[in-house]
Image (cartoon, rainbow, N blue to C red; front, top):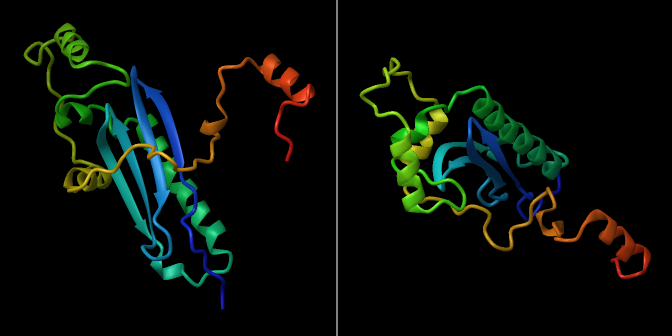
Amino acid sequence: MAKTFEKAVTGFNHNIKHKGKVYHVQTEDSGVNNPHIITHLFVGGNILATKKTSYSDILNAESLPEVVRELMEEQHKEMLRNLINGVYDGLESAQGRVFQPGELASQAEARAKAQPSAASVPLPAPQPLPPEVIAARAMKVQPKINEVGVETLFGEDLISEKSLDEVILSYLAGDGEQG
């Protein structure tokens, strides 16, 4: 019988700039008690797209944590590829008010006024929505972005105001952590 893991596999978070806007992609595992992987695409604090994949059919797999990590990586990369390939372009305007990180409502209103009015821009033919966009719009409870205390793979907790030279000198002087 294969060993199962008790804790959820640590997730992924990326901020990516695409066509002048900052998007946040977050992938997380819910653990074996609720075996699914969920990836959200945020823009301006709003969920633009969501993809949820169950792995209940592989709970007895050998090396389950490694298998779940691979599934998470692929789903995360798929959301990033879809973003870069334009699958979600133009959808954020249908979500209502969108704010960029650190932007105030008055700044967003000024930005919206500076953009051409809808009357002067020809509308493209409507395209069917991707399934992950439909799933995101159907969500009743919105998840939090980067909850406090959630570990990430990419070392956000290691970010420092020190320069690289200062970090190296501190380490060489014996002030750095040794593991």
